[in-house]
Length: 116
Length: 109
Image (cartoon, rainbow over all chains, first blue to last red; front, side, top):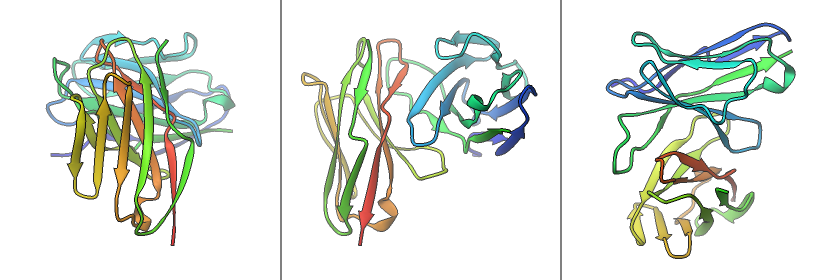
């Protein structure tokens, strides 16, 4: 059973370009979470999605950032007109379903975005 | 507001024992997770506690006191490979994980 997959692992963009980060959850998982991590800092929640639905985007900047999880294919985190402050590691995690009991989130290897 | 507090950095000696504390304040509570994260890598799951008490798993144990909003991760027989950041995260009433900033553990020979 393949784990959570993210690509690319490393992404370099110039200011003003667009960045597209992809996440394929573990097989059987229908919940996807995106986090941002700056160097030497903890994880910051960005958005939580289920198939074709954004459930919670309270951690997502209002401008330039968007996320989707289509019926088919990976979840996409899109950053338009990137700025240097967007440089960070972006982690995706997935879980099988939310319910009454604990649902461990399994993390992908992350995408390290560097904005020049 | 919701908040997770844990020390920024700790140092311990190879072969020794270390306890990493975490206090939490959340809107509702559905459990407490500990994750390990090596530099440049993804977090990996270590433990989950929802009932008061100690859960032991090999060299690692995790403790929870719901009344005190407190948890700790205990690492025994420390090895150099245990050098990593340890992230505490609480599951709130909406089943969202609230993350601490992590404790960087440095192991010295």
